[in-house]
Amino acid sequence: MKSETLKNAAVSTLVGATLVTGVIVLAPGWGKDAPPPAPGPVARAMAAADTGAPASLTDLDALIRNRERFVRSHPGDRRSWAALGSAYVERGTRFGDTADYPKAERALKRSLGAVPAAKGNVDALVGLAELANARHDFAGARGHAERARKQQPERWSVYPALIEAYHGLGKYAAAGKAMDKLLELQSGPQVQGMEARVYWNKGWREDAAALAYGATANSRTPAEKAVALHREGELAWERGEAADAVEHYTKALKAVPGGHRSLAGRARALAALGRTDEALEDYRSALAKVPLPEYALESGELYESLGLSGDAATQYELMRQQVTRAGEHGVNGDLVLARYEADHGDPAAAVRRLQGEWRRGHRSVYVADAMGWALYKAGRADDALPFARLATDQGLRSALFSYHLGEIERALGDYGPARRHLDEALRTNPHFSPLLAPLAREARDALGEPEAGGPTDMTGDGPSPLESPAPPQSPSASAPAAPSPSDSSSKAPAAPSEPSATSAPSSPSASSASSASSAGSVPDGAAASQAPAAARPAPELRPVQRSATADSAVATTG
Image 1: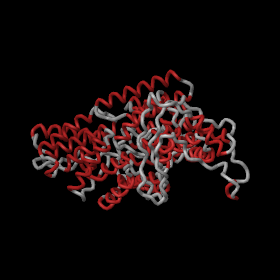
Image 2: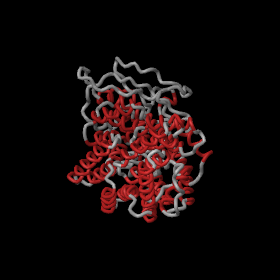
Image 3: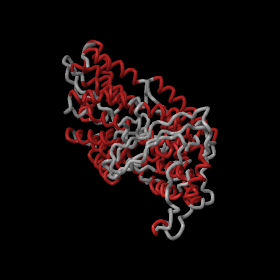
Image 4: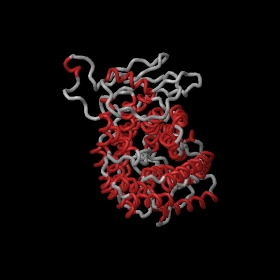
């Protein structure tokens, strides 16, 4: 299921990612010369793989040792190589050791060397798709998974990797169709958990919560129950129910003590409840087990919110070191680094990193949101708006996304929409970030309440003081007219150009003042604080269609 190497980790701020913890499905089969597994940890690990359930760490290690021994004497057994490669991916993904990924790549290539993909080696293709997802190479994962599906369309284990890849690329309609096919072929707690995530991305929170609860109720092993309880904790956190999230994470940790993902999740929720000493202890425990970059970033932001700048700097440096280490094993860490740069470093550097992601086809709502925020922090609020709208228009209800959009609109003088989106952020999760949630409340207070009497244009007296004007464009911009709601061919924004050294500077405050002239008087303190305006070229941004239904809430990437 869902690889969580770079998950939402709310920072809600990351990731992350993601909303659910899952497993990588092992490629089935022992090979024609392999004996059947004896009862014990190896058999349990293979039984878990057959249903997509997570194996315990001890069982997974036993399976890896067993396959390592077997392939030494049977170097041409493609199924055993594929099973070994997928087992490495699962261990690396679930337990944060990216050093397993090069081992997985070698094993899977040995499998393909024995039997090429063109001759039916679907096991290796599925393993390669899982590996590419774990490394955040979603285009590569889609390629491998679609080749596997073409060869064996009725094989259920192809679809979790395919759904993961589609999510990373922002192809949510395709992910939904793949989910429908998976439901035809397989059932059980892991499939319920993946379905919950698809529903959550559509904004169907109650349905997602019901499926997550069902996955917990139907779990059979401690490892499976821990995954399901963690998923319930993630959904509770995203709903702003911090106390419930703590309860779910604590139960997950009782099922499987020491789970680093549940420790980090509980730390996030404890911080929201004001229990910062306990939160910092959980972060320390999670980082001691698996120093993932997103944990270090979240921990650093909590330290910073407490005024402990030295401790925060230590965590940020740890984050950089971990991204570098993971990069040596083929993992793309640009999204987490861009999140850091936008809020704590060089926003222009964040934009450059995200340009690369966008051009690689990584156009998920998380990348769109990060791009919009980085552009805003770089002083390019008008360029940022289409990306922020894209992130919020797809159905997912994220306090972070709503806050980012609200601040961008406030900078442009769109005070009515800004007020609405800041309210939405604080309703969704009033403690979504220890650093940004207080800023959201300050921004909302600065906007005040709308003028009494409602919009004036309802009586034909002119423009409403709450009406949002179109974002200002440079004279040389050539963005097409906004499509009608029925135009399903609208595309996501093109990646913004880098600022040119010869471009004339354009001040966000000037564009805000221009917008304010059609939006009524500017409330006291309404001007957003930004980084100094940077020189920027005319954006080539296509307006984003606002989808009419949750089913069609999909980012089209062209």
